[in-house]
Image (cartoon, rainbow, N blue to C red; front, side):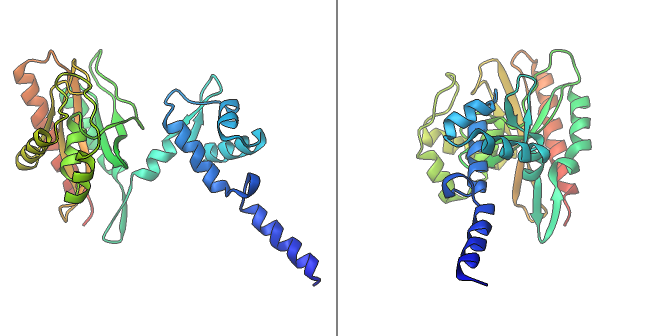
Length: 269
């Protein structure tokens, strides 16, 4: 084989793994996912092309491939959003060499919880510096709240967020507490010392409460889902409107705790 032919084959092989201007296609795909993460309403091909400054055909090929795996999905208006396939990947958990699907494992428990309380519920996990909604079960009563799968919120505000925050390592917790914390409502805890006290209470009692920290009219309870070895996996929470009576709130709180314990017990050893 001539040296020029060998060089051409090498270039062809490299180009198969690389996108526009020598940038790996995988990197471009991750760029697209990052853009869509910041735009819950979605973005169309033109918007993605302009933001990434790469050919329209390249963007189309990438989103088409991601769409086949449901990593992204196309809306009726032509915009693309993050899809359920991304959530399915995130739901795969490895415990002692055994992989399990947390969402599938929890599904029957989540449906039973929705029936028991009439309210929607959600599973939330840590995603870098935020908490992301992994799965949602719709409310069974009229006018119940409906969280959105894939939605991400701050770590310091809300029942699920504080539950996740309470289970971070000491080093990671201190890093998070050193970051600016936005006051979404007058009830949002933004002082690191006050938040430490709150997190200590959460660890001690085994559940967390949102008293209107992210939105004044929305409250919630959350409880931890843990592996057999005690490692925290996710937060289970039930959001509800703030006008619930005290007895109803207590009923929801206990239902969340019971369901989180039942899901934890089903995680394979």
